[in-house]
Image 1 (spheres, rainbow, N blue to C red):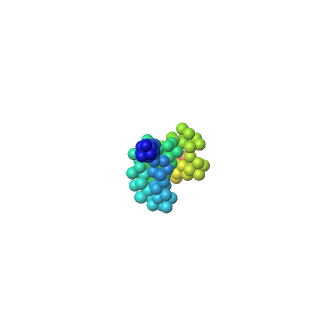
Image 2: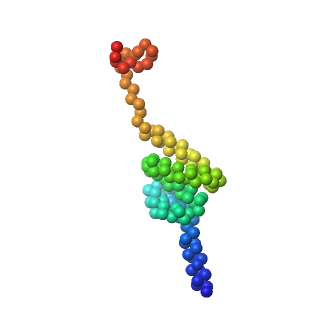
Image 3: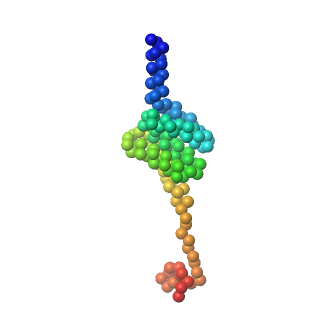
Length: 140
């Protein structure tokens, strides 16, 4: 009887998800700026997302997104920050204030980096300047 109760409790813990322990290692590695190892830890736990609690899914998206942005994978980071924001929108008090702030700052940082990757408009200056003050295209 005792063995079956322990087995039942163990299986309930296993099937209910892994909770914060699933993402704890990745979060720690991110905070230590070990971004490659953090990315690997998050990748290994992605298949457990469906069994995680909502707060853990939001934290997973937040820290995986921040990790990918730190590694220069802006589109991957954007995808996971979008995921974290969607979780947060569904339950506005899901993340604590410090992680909501981190999410907002992460989004701002990502947007700045994405802007930097856009091609700059080329300005061709020629010898003359049109009378309107606009740069001349060289035609008379």
